[in-house]
Image 1 (cartoon, rainbow, N blue to C red):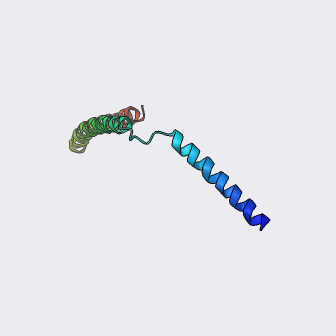
Image 2: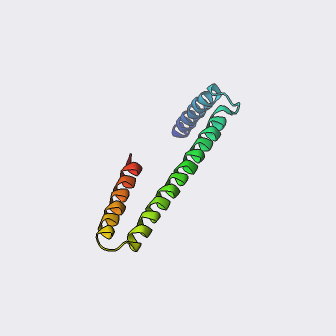
Image 3: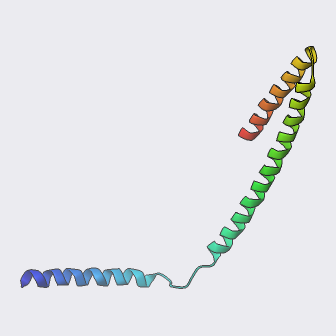
Length: 97
């Protein structure tokens, strides 16, 4: 009987402490983080679109150089291959920055 009363008392104290901590916090919803999240999401989408446009431009430039390389003959082909390789290295360095 004594043990049961002790367990009930400890449980009651635990419940009262828990209720005390939860009452200190405001219950009103905070809309500021949601608005900030939407703004960050829109900024991220804009950066994503900018990145996609940049990648498309890089692919077009590299595609044009590869086309020239494939059409070239002799020493011009070697120069065109060097141009393709240099462009690939430059694009990779740009992406990694």
